[in-house]
Every structure is written in C-alpha cells, then in structure tokens.
Amino acid sequence: LLPRLCAARRATAAAAMAAWRRGLSSSSGAVTTTTAKAAAVDMPDSAFEETHTGQRFEPGDYRLARFVGKQKLINKQQAIDLVHEVPPIPSQDRVVHCDGGDPALGHPRVYINLDGPGPHICGYCGLRYFYEDKHHH
Image (cartoon, rainbow, N blue to C red; front, side, top):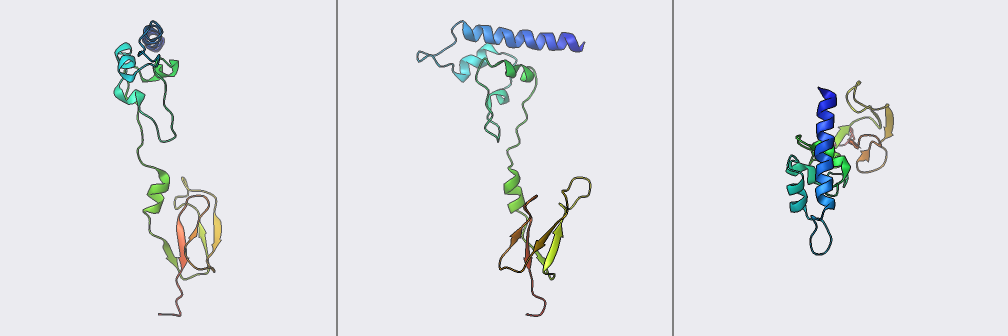
C-alpha cells in the first residue's frame, strides 16, 4: 500500500509540475498561486503558506509532493514570544541554576550570577531571573 501511495503522490506532483511547465504562468512569466492551486488539485491551501523560518515552496516545486492530500502544519507561535510571556523569576540567592525545568526535555544545567541589576537571561532557554534582596523591604 505504501509504495502505491507514494507513487500516487509522485504522479500527482509530477502532473502538477507538468501543467505548470505547460504554461500556467501570468503575462509576466511568474506562476501565480491561483494557477498553481488549479494545477495541483489535491494540494491544500496551507501547502503554499510560509513557515516561521521563511520556508515557502514555489508552485511546481517537487517538494510540494509531501503535502498532496495532507494539511501542512504551521506553528504560528514563535518560541521567543512564548518565553517573553513568562515573567522574570525572583531569587533570594545571588547565584541560581537553570536546567530548563524538565529533566527529560530541558537543557544542561547552567549557573547564572544575579549580582548585576535587572533580569539575567539563561542562554539556553531564555528564562529570566533577578535578584530579590531579602534584607531590604
């Protein structure tokens, strides 16, 4: 079943590429998304969306075959934005360690000196820590 499915996807992608090459281009010579979608009937709209890394396949690209009959999953959330939603973590110690929080999914333990003013950022995961002086109220 798998070889037939792969062959069917390759055939669909090849047909889309052949149709594209036959002249599904605009007057400027550039292939439009609409004509590419018409050529690739089984392609979901998400196959033509740009990912967070800027990856976007041109119409007729053979790599679009992986999205024939499937949805291209795109995560619209950036890790840096999610980390900034976590408030800085106070500490009454001048040196803290950060291991990412989860032993299985975290990162190597690093020690962060909190002597300077303001929050101090873990170089691995971006969590922020600050020194909260317990002697001053």
